[in-house]
Length: 162
Image (cartoon, rainbow, N blue to C red):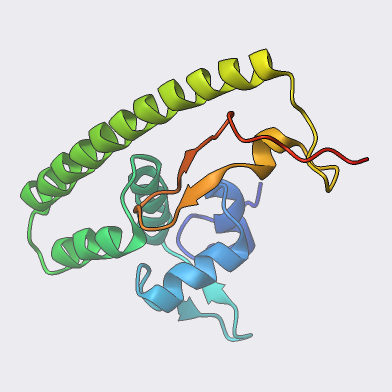
């Protein structure tokens, strides 16, 4: 660990402290998630304690499902002197609703997959004419759904290689 104080850390020191790459820090800067940093006489970026705290905040917000756009909204409110808690709670409520919807989609998918897997195992058909596994090759994708939804068709007769 560097002996430098938090004020004036180089990008590599910050990256090690917060567990992200230097490219991630530069990317955050390009999006406006981090303010432009001071530069040393040699042109190196120098980061303050607030920059380190903001990167840690960004990573925590991402870990609970906030997008970088949402994180930028929160940081901008804070930088304008506003308390962003009401906005954060609204975003978190929307995130919770999206998670609940995804759980329902996954439950339905799990049920369909379990049913189709049982049917495929009972049929003992395994190979298409192209030598591919029929279980995967015969999947039909629903391309109009928001998420990829697949319906397996175990009753198709796979063409076997002669």
